[in-house]
Length: 354
Image (cartoon, rainbow, N blue to C red):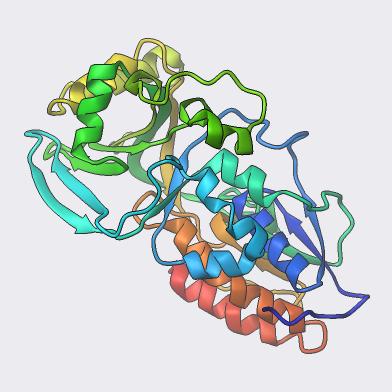
């Protein structure tokens, strides 16, 4: 059990009530550190864009951050709560041109969390106001706190020669079964000509059993969980693109999606083409920020999550975040009496971000 920290004059502001910010705030709460979250959304999960993410090696740290009660409910916000965990889990890597499975990377007991549900869970019981003394910038890749610490030029994201699109959609029953036959959680496919396709199961509340759903969402119209057409999938499609322009408008985005999806082997090709006419597709030029040291203002300001190390899809970012949050909070708890202690963990965050 964490040792409580008592200092009535010590108060932390976390800028950004996303998954990272709420997790840090829960840890502050367990350590008896006054903590206030500042969030630009008028209500939780106001933005409709959703995704899921994996926790691969950092579950002990996550459990430490959120506490026993919330930790016990994490299985309810998995992308597939009914499936649970398996020590036989693998991550297939596929040749996107031929459909051949190139390798299966062992990923035992992988935890894939639905972002919006996880955020709602870790936001429970937290204070959201705007009075602060100490700041943790957890305000995402375009962090204003990072800009405050480093200046606009040094804090700016660096665009990459890679363009990415994403969507969350269901499929027809036949294609949905074929996709899940590849792997029942997620996989990635690399095409020799450049496109990279990633799919992950993103089952929403509608696909859960009535008994389980009652504990998560008491009032809901629940269809048959055995119908593959109700399964939700998270799509990602990226490709090299040295052009500095970005597809503008829905039709141009959809045209790029179709052009690259046509190159994929079955059943990926059918899965990507089927959703194109009606799906809401989010598109961005991928960018990163090569983490560099910041002035923590005598132990008063630090960065976490995407604000500290924004990056592309190449590494399990949330696992990195959760592995850093407990030591960040440990040092933060002592920084009121010894401000230099926070520099130790800031240096660790910087080194791992680089």
